[in-house]
Image (cartoon, rainbow, N blue to C red; front, top):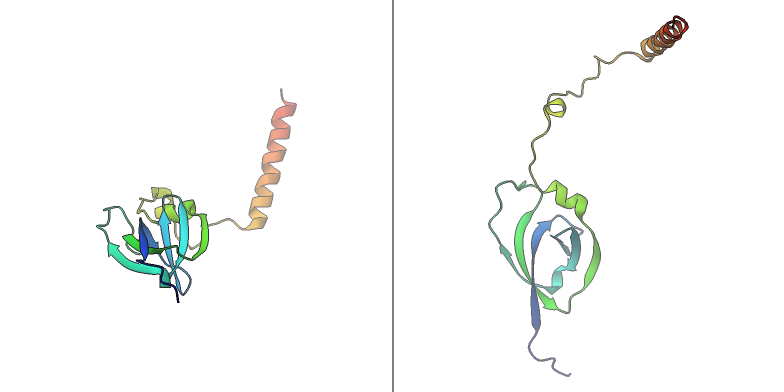
Length: 126
C-alpha cells in the first residue's frame, strides 16, 4: 500500500447548523455546505455574536481533511436570515392565532356589494 504522506487539512469558519445524519452542515456567507463527518478533524466553537439565535446555529471553526467529501453545496441566504434575533414589528407581535374577530365571508360579500353600489351612485351624481 502506498503512503500518501501527511494528511493535509484546511480550515473553514461559519455557523454549524442541523443537517442530515452523517453530514456536517456549515453556513459560510450565504452558502451552506454539507461535509462528510468522517472528514472532520476538529471543531472549535467561537464566541457567539449577541444577536445570534442560539437555537439556530453555533459559530465554529472546522478543520477538515483535504480533499473532503461534499454532499451538497447550496444557496444559504434563507438559512442566514434565520440565524439572527430580530424584533418583530408590533403589528405581527401582537397578533394572535385566534381568527374569531374576522368577518364571515357572507358579510364581506355584502360589504363589497354595498361599496360597489355606493360608488355607482356617487358616479351618477357627478
